Image 1 (tube, helix red, strand yellow):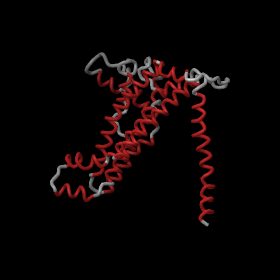
Image 2: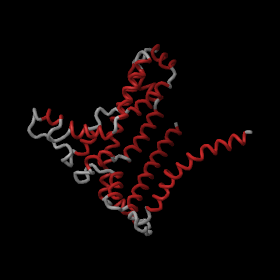
Image 3: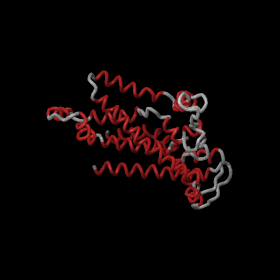
Image 4: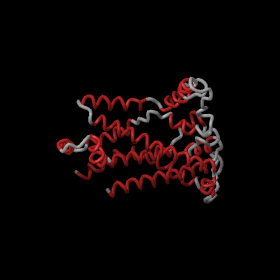
Length: 288
């Protein structure tokens, strides 16, 4: 009887397994194969060894892209993590449970808005050099208002500022879940000891939500390495290479220059970086 139940279960998951193998694992394996070729799409692929990987490290646009994502990661780590933690702590300590749930919904609702809408509002409505709301305000104080996305020195930082107020609903929920897993008796004991709210956070709550914070950092590594939306929608990596990212260079080499073999090599390098970052993050979690 037990064997028949197991067989039935395996049969039931076979369609899902087939779909995952076909649309997730098979493209990944073929990407690895074509990364060693000069494949240009419909043409025949010729083996070129490690030439594509050597080009990855020589490509000045890619080097600038990796430098850009380093800046994006540090900025995002400070802003998104800090804001998400602050909001999660405030929701956690809010009075009635119904209000806690209300605020959770409020901060998650923006996730339903497509990212393209946020990019359009940030670029065209707020930070447009001629008609943007920000420059309209600054024009009352100076005649030389910034060209936010036309200046190589400002373009990347303008994209970062566009994320204001740096609220990420998923990160808030993850950190809040960690706070809610803390035994109420711990906080009650801290209150009886007269520990202030600030000390309670630094000495009790923050150490206990480290696993959630590390998961947030892991997700952020993946998200930053895959940054491509603003580049496709608006900047095209410019001016120059000031806002480009490795993911955008992958996209551009594949769809604009038909360099599919080289693009696959970029993809494999990004996969290796995401895998390495995830393994390091998991190992640190396991040690604790």
